[in-house]
Image 1 (cartoon, one colour):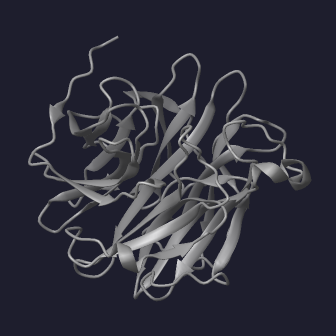
Image 2 (tube, one colour):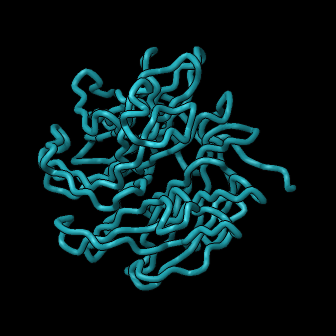
Length: 355
């Protein structure tokens, strides 16, 4: 295996956005609203001394904002949604104060009610739960409030995992993954709306997993040119665990090429950002030594990737799920989750500049 080579991210400055000793906070998504105002959503749940539990009846999505481009965050003025099983909420700013998002909604039951819930308790380390599905949520007041009547169940039983995407023609897309049909192997799928989120299509297969190949999970979408889409995927593949795969669509997501390996080793979820100069930025958590948050650039639409930079080191593999944005001066903010010196998992940020 080729040695993993990387450099430290140039002019990196670390910041801790949210950390609370009794909480396990993870899966951040950050967007820029107007001017220097940022909005960030993340999963917040009780911290369990026995170890990480991704499901909890007290799980919520917490939404906080920064008035000054991420220098400070108004934590005490947080908004919340998806009580009782919020897992992840991928934000998209639509302009005019409207913020939309793809919610991964879980239905979580107390352990004492496992039998009465009727839900198979298949994950002993977790609470009894099932996936409600991928849900489109929106706010018309800059994310100040999230009304329960402004939600649409888009994909029953699947899990949203990345930001919703708006194509240049206005089409909205939500990538998700889960077991499709009779198969118990995870497949990646997208849902599209041609009327600003009022109604949504049935699921369109991006990559269908099979027992003889691999599971395709946690897809993230990016429009390269009008109608030309790139999808990056985390896969479940016992023969080559932790590698990102990719595929493309040239017809607005209706059909997709056969997935192929990128050779990039992570073990967590890929995240993409199209920079102002047209290049693609890929950020990810690496759950193999050397642990940490890494970034790399592509100037050919994700067919190949250049140098790798470490944004921040990590003590172990429990980290990742990045979200980035680029400011007008070229400075980048990459948010993620990770542990502090006391082992408390919270939301962090790295300000850095591409060389």
